[in-house]
Structure formats: C-alpha cells, structure tokens
Length: 293
Ligand code: RIB
Image 1 (cartoon, rainbow, N blue to C red):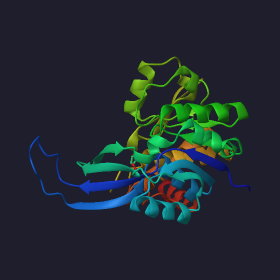
Image 2 (image 1 turned 90 degrees about the horizontal axis):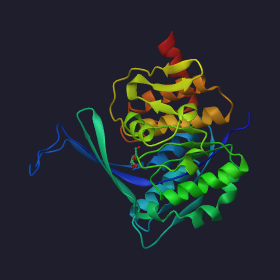
Image 3 (image 1 turned 180 degrees about the vertical axis):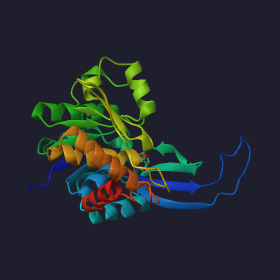
Image 4 (image 1 turned 135 degrees about the vertical axis):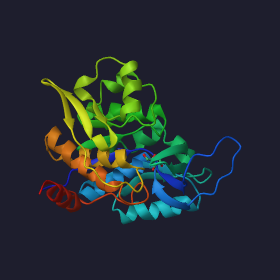
C-alpha cells in the first residue's frame, strides 16, 4: 500500500521541561525535581507522530541560527521527515517552549523565535509540497496569515486540511470554511464554538483520557480513550492529530481513525517529552489488541 503523504506546516521548538511537585506562589522559590530539553513544537510533534505511524512526511517551517536548530535538524532527519521546506534564519533564535510539569498536567509558555518568520512568501515558495500531499496538517504556532495562505493553496488544489487550533486564537470564517476537520481540545473548543458559525460537521474535540467526541447525523459520537498511567502529557494532542491525519489520508473511516489515534495518544503519555512516547503503527495495534483481549 502507498504511504500517505502528509505535509505539516507549523512550529519547531526546543522544549525546556521542568518537573516539580506543586506550583510556587508569587515570589516563592521552590526546588524542582528534574530538568530536560526535548524536541517539540506542535508542528514538529505532529510531523513525528505521522512519520512514526508510517506516513511520508514533509515539513514547512523554520529554525533559528543557534545550537537548538542543529539538534532539531538532526532529529528531523532521524525521523525521516523531509526538511526541504524548513529554512534556517541565522539572526533568529529557534522557538522554545518552557514547560512546567506538575500536578499531573502541563503548562506551556512558547516564545516563537524563528517560527514567527514562517511567512506567506515562504509557504508560496514551497507550494508544491502542499499540493502534492494527501493531507495538510496545520496548528497556530506560526503567523495566522501563513496558516491562511496554506489553507488557500491546499483548498484550491483539493487537498484535505486538518487544523489543530492551538494555541487558541480567533479564526476567520474564510479559514474555517476551507478546513476539512478542526481538532481543538475542550478549552479551545469552547472558544471556537463561542465565536463561530456552525462547525459541527468538521469538529473533533479531544478530551484527554476520555477520548474524543464528534457530531454525526445521528447525534454525538464519543470514542473512548485508553486508561494508562501518564508520565508526561505533553504532545498527547499532537500525537492524536498526527496519527488521525495519517489514518484518514489512507482511507480509514472517522470512527476507526479516532480509535487508533486515541490509542496512539495514550501510549504517547507513558514516556517523557512530547515525542518520547510517540508509537509506531505496530505498537498501536499491539496495544489495542492487548486492551481488547
Ligand atoms: O503540544 C505540545 C507542544 O506545545 C510542545 O512540544 C511545545 O513545544 C508547544 O509548542
């Protein structure tokens, strides 16, 4: 079977992750329990999830001119993600995300750095990657005009688009009408539904360990998640988006694709770092078999 071609247009970050027992009060200093750097960025994470699951992945994005850029470029190559659409901007820093892991969840502060220089012109330069894809995957960690530019190119070429509207921002109706599926988490969904026209036929809401829900003609459909003991929840939603897009691009139906992506997402939180636990297709299928036996 031909591998589905996915193009991810989005952010590439170095994640600076600190683990600690509780949030400090204002003005308080606490000892943390660990610190580590991991590859991240919603775009890069989704690209890795799709690639490990078996898609042929190209990325359009940017890194800076620092040491983080070199490490992240090596990882792109190790994951066999085509980086022909990734430029390095010498006078910029690579995007970073300061991640606070405490009380079973994550809090993230992103500094875009070079991700902020993924311009509509840069997308135009790599339009072939977009139009030759089976699916395009977008998030909101690059400038909105570049997200809109990508959606315009993909839409005109008839390439389906998945948008993960994270971090939450106001979305124009001209963007929303072009996307095939929008995949927010519950908080992002609340913002979206508050500010937009009827999105029901394209909305998939991820609900952490409870799985995912969407609307069908028969009503609300809930596809349950898989219980696991989480080590690091960073990137769970990215794993879901990367695997879901691969499944849909190869022709799986929506319910099956959601079930598989839920399983992938559950596995992803069992290891440290956004990409650390992202599974191969074989690992996902074995996990589902084990859970169902
Ligand atoms: O979705 C998780 C990602 O969000 C992290 O890897 C971090 O880089 C931020 O972009």
